[in-house]
Length: 256
Ligand SMILES: Nc1ncnc2c1ncn2[C@@H]1O[C@H](COP(=O)(O)OP(=O)(O)OP(=O)(O)O)[C@@H](O)[C@H]1O
Image (cartoon, rainbow, N blue to C red):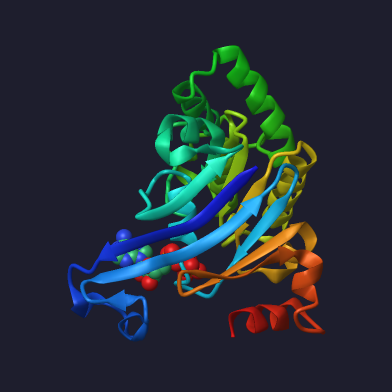
């Protein structure tokens, strides 16, 4: 179980001229600070998949980066099974598997070496790493490129290795920032099936997306954030019933 309460993060605006026109008008801009995340709340239980939705710039990536401990929050709490991970970053790194949109692979290493390197950082033995890579290779369909250097991988290959790398240590919670962005139909399906496998193993999964069809297929619960604030939290059926017709309409209703 992961519980996020009143999470907040502001950034100092070093050069106001560099802000986009939209950011200049955004109520989150207060003096020299841009309050990217102001009050985000949600929770995700064992065996649940939570879809994190929001318009561009809503604060989804900033929120997920705080959950992964890559960013230090200015306020709020993040608890895994009741333990505040901000008090114990080592526990957090052990407990959370995080796929970020920006971390690259080491091009000179093979797919297997990239995954194994992370396994070693987590203190796994060679035997544990080999066994886990075999398991992940089967579900993420890595076998045809696992032994190749990753420098020339396609977007889909890179993403599948990155996902394997994020979960090699069997984390208690998995957090995926836009896991299917830029992927073709086949690679998207592989990632969707992988999320279903995690769910079947009872691992809570939180993923951000702009694809409402993925939300319909995968999610038990939905959180919508806009301008750094949670606007909606609820199960998929309640989200669907926000507006008859389509999830698209439900999304619009939730942020308006
Ligand atoms: N390091 C930073 N310094 C200053 N502003 C930042 C920083 N990181 C994010 N922001 C700003 O915070 C806001 C939220 O960004 P964030 O990337 O979290 O949004 P998002 O919901 O993930 O958007 P998208 O759907 O486009 O990926 C944006 O206006 C962004 O420019």
